[in-house]
Image 1 (spheres, rainbow, N blue to C red):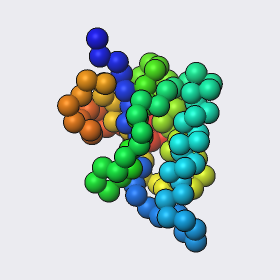
Image 2 (image 1 turned 90 degrees about the vertical axis):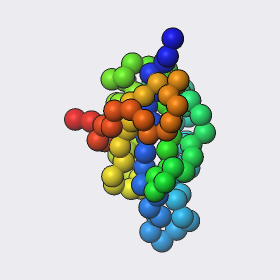
Image 3 (image 1 turned 45 degrees about the vertical axis):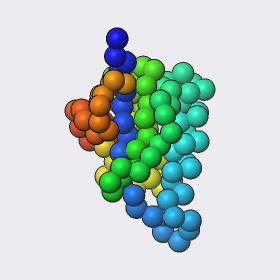
Length: 105
């Protein structure tokens, strides 16, 4: 049975005045915290996909995963324009699923 997964797509925008894309490390550290809290699990390593860097989370309900994705999108230094794609772990393609603007209100 397929498990719900949320892809978090973040525009590949360099951080001003510092190492390029340092927000990737910020998000990866935050995802570890989410795992420790039991809020979500990292499904796989993040990767570049077109003009975005994509992180994958699962291990919760759609509502809980979108709440976690919203928290990611509002971290300091994360570029504006992040969005989520609700899919499952059996999807054939990255980005195939329902697109949700972040943060979810």
